Image 1 (spheres, rainbow, N blue to C red):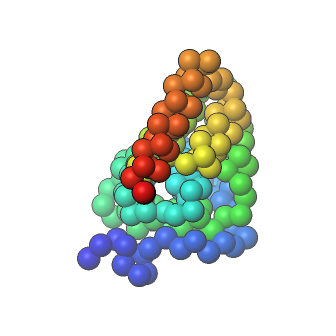
Image 2 (image 1 turned 90 degrees about the vertical axis):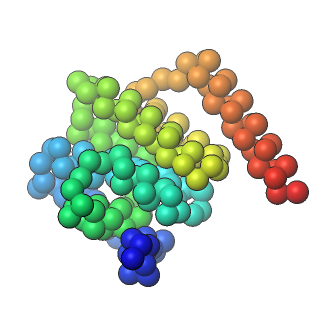
Length: 165
């Protein structure tokens, strides 16, 4: 049976769960993983839908045993219900990681960028959220990167409009 049975499908309901408070007593490594799962989940739903493809892509990012899969899905469900905006979570993760692990922060932004393309729809909302996270992490976008990103987004949106005609 698929992980997307009725009971396992990630719900778009919201609640007052604060992921950072709930897991504050876990190890730093565990909180980092939860932080990445939270950012990934919030990014993937930024365009208004959360697909099975995106869920599977998130699960591939975090190394885990098959027995841990349901736990990761539960954390993603909790992240989905969390009302805090993505920039709140990015700031919490940045404070936890600090300046000494910039490579982890760069990796996290690269993962978010990859996830934004998983469903073949790179939305303005996803682009905005990735830029917010990168800015909070202190990762400056060069002029060339900005130009490439905007050009790619323009042609991607043009292609999508043409396909929908």
